[in-house]
Length: 230
Image (cartoon, rainbow, N blue to C red; front, side, top):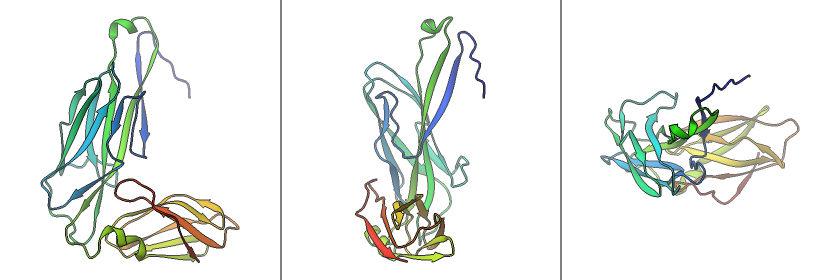
């Protein structure tokens, strides 16, 4: 693909960090890799810092559903603001929609886009490629009084081999993300399993033996490795 940049123009390139924590030249960073929203709470919050001592950033924040469409039942305040150099900000997240399922988590995505400020005078007559950073992290709405605490969810996973696929069943009410999955020493892609549901993962040709995996907890930390024989 050819990219033609005209003199004096500014081109914005959108870079998405699915891992959640975005940092632009030591600039904008989110305070978490996931948001847990207690369903009974009126609101929750997400911290954000601008560690750049010189640059300002225009921040735009919104919530999407699983299909990647903007979710109108959520409000993020402020939705659009300027983050000053070396500052901290708090994004407040408010759910104002109908009741969500009470027996399991619901999944949404928090999006925060940071566009660095520009000095128009310094760009006169120059070709500039400017980067806008988009951080996209998971937002889980968690009902109160679920049938088990989140620490027990991993014990309710079941693994089975179905032909050339790995089937992972999740009987818990929580979303579970598996990482560092290996079957017989061969690495598999990361996998997220919805509550009271199952997910399938293709198995590399010739892979067999013991399956090992880790998970991501509420704080974004990787849990100790577990293994199971298929």
